[in-house]
Image (cartoon, rainbow, N blue to C red; front, side, top):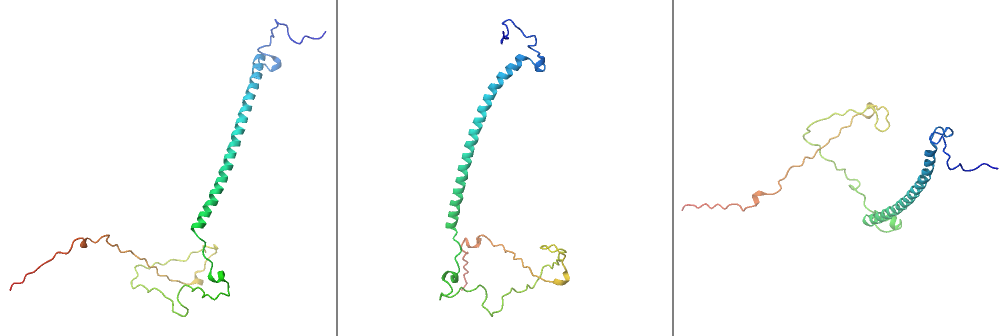
Length: 183
């Protein structure tokens, strides 16, 4: 005969609260934890599924927003192009070199005319001498002040003259004075 698979009905394990095979843990407590863990695993699975659905929804929202941003950028570029036209090409380039139209006049004085310069001021308020830097600001190499020599510049500051906002003298007509001569 084989062994009985279930204990007798009146059997009570002496190690029920402190089993040496379970490293001193209670068998009842361990069984309750095992049953509770299956419920917790189900809860965690549902939470993971809800989070995955929320992540998918957020990714869809991000994709929609990226598409909307791209649409708004292209619309903004179109409005900018319509409002600010590109500079017109030069006449020679547009019509070609064989065109008979006169070329655009260059800016500035006509060739052969003397250049225009400002007059040197009669009174100079102050004279400031500025030493050349020891290092070049562009290449950081040592500068040689003997090579360049001296250069002088005149800086003119235009001081605005305050003007009155209104003319109070013209608000009323000037008084009329009559002088009678004695005859």
